[in-house]
Image (cartoon, rainbow, N blue to C red; front, side, top):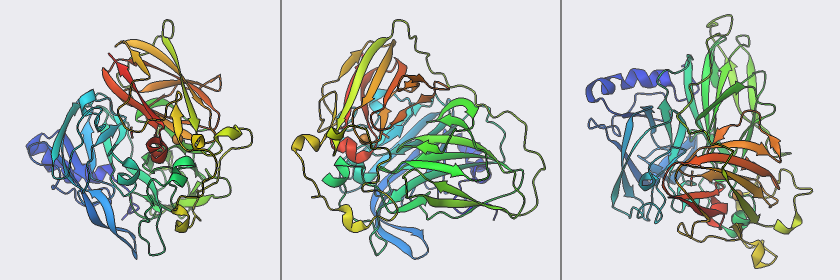
Length: 498
Ligand code: C2O
Ligand code: CU
């Protein structure tokens, strides 16, 4: 087999899915995320409906000898089935809740109508145990997206409820393989089982629940087998509750072609590829080393805790001597361009957390609570000192306790808006906006290189970022930190487009 077992291969998918396309004209197809095997028909029915059943007690194997009997998963697999559709398609998904608690599904990064956004109580009633809900919406944007619950997500996502949603371009760029990697980390105990303590105060006020075991597509990473000359589109999705990845591809020159599903001018990163929780980065990799070469993909985000995520192994005969010269720039998505002249300007300030009072001076990449070496025994809360105003997180001074609250601002539909996001904490935060993608205009007053379209902006301690978008999607929308423990501890707000 020429793929790492963890790879999701587009080629394989198309072969195995071809029959279904022909007969049903289904808007979406599913493929099993954990293997390159035959796409199971289980989820994609002939009625064009995708079925996702959320369940508990799922037996999940992280790898040889690493069985977890109590994962929570869609259709019994971690990640949930990959949904692949074409831009312009309408997606219809029946979600069947077999959990013992309410749930919803949020289509992260997809610009859906408000009622389909999957935020409990705000955009829909929670899907109670035994109930079903049908999500249905058009796919305006091509790109790399994902789905996950928005209710008690720190545990529901943390136990394995998430999956990729890939929306293909009308005219995709030419690559030999299109691979999706959902990155995650797990906090496993000595028996290799998911340790409890979800949402502990300790995690909530510090770096979030960072695990001790990193997986790609739910499995312990296996080397990626490639051939010399091969061009791969690698779609990276960070599904971790809290871990930030900073990836270095040793001996390779990845070019970033999309961030958070949205095309960006192809460019080489000027450092590691950073992925805060919920972020996606699509890279094009031309595999130009000699056959037999082995090189490492390192994650060096947390200082002193660098580790090898996985390796690239060259095998077989070269596919070609020179890299492909076909274009790698993606066609733009139909996003409205904000007009900065006459834009409404608003400030959104994030505060709180342990050491919130220390200011940002010396704190760069914090190490507290994080890292591979962490012992599961550290999950208990109760390490806290300090006063209660250091416990929660706030957005514009308010620590939200549920999904429904007074909007922090109301924007007329069609209004261009510039939001100045101010991270006045000593921690990193990936800030996510629902219903819209935004341009990141500047960071700490310095213009960004590509005015990147994103839906989640990773902010370093004490950083200020300016984002801009057209408030063109009516409804009440969330704006929150995607470190799921931070969100649960108050780092969320809503804004209204009316
Ligand atoms: Cu990925 Cu508010 O969500
Ligand atoms: Cu945060």
